[in-house]
Length: 78
Image (cartoon, rainbow, N blue to C red; front, side, top):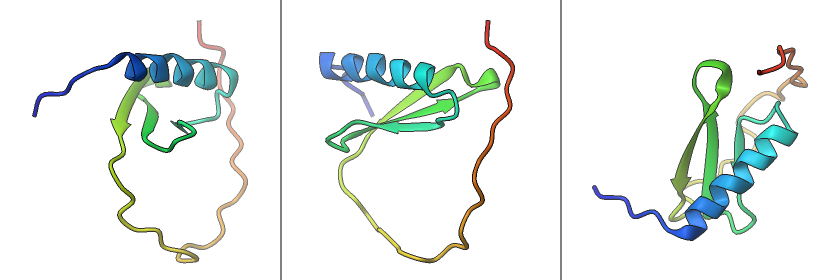
């Protein structure tokens, strides 16, 4: 599989970097059109993995117990 990177993909990368910087608790970020998703990964969560979303496969409602509120305590990344 050969991926083609376009300017809109690089623009989304910058958007995701900005959102992850503003909201360090986020692990995922999706664009408004829901066509791209960024995942914050890696040691110290300093890497971003971007996927293009072609279509929704399955949306299942009310199959999990309610999740507790997430509270993260982290050191400042230098």
